[in-house]
Length: 226
Image 1: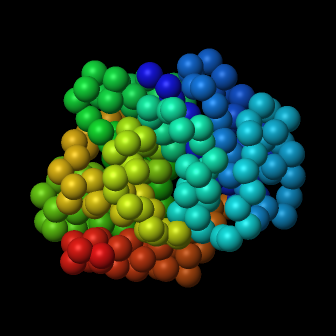
Image 2 (image 1 turned 45 degrees about the horizontal axis):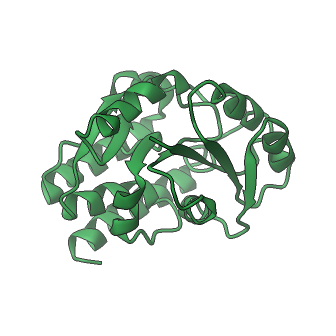
Image 3 (image 1 turned 120 degrees about the horizontal axis):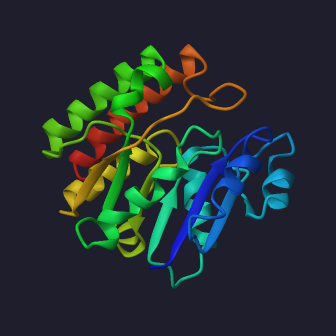
């Protein structure tokens, strides 16, 4: 199984090198870091650590993910997504990939529920719980988290027609996968506090509120067929 990793990154020079190097023993074919308009040395640090760097100046988590997908070779089997800030526990990659490797899942989401109180802000926990509840109610899936640490079969991802370019990317994937009848599995993962700096979303009240509104809007849009 050929697995490629995509790491969207914005001003993460303090963390990105360590994240890329930590993936060296995980059996990945390639690691693509998408520099989403950084004003620091994120791109240089990622490249020095061994990643392939792709530039996507149009801001937005979804924009960065879409750029990373477009840059991948065509023969991959699975795409792994993780954050650039060191908050994802890469030792869980084997467990994250196992349901796909065993033919039990098309999409696997790393659920931080067990460690949420330690690594997520109060607004993040509340927003996550509300969005997960909406996913359960609107799509009938057993969701507990919208965590960015996830793996998906490449063919499955291509079939979803992903369009969101900002905060709604992760929930759009889960909602579209449910609507398409794909097999989604959650795997418990241990979240960590980011290694340095402040989150671009949860680090401000405005960012957290904007992300929450976009996530709920995305669920409704996909449920309506959009």
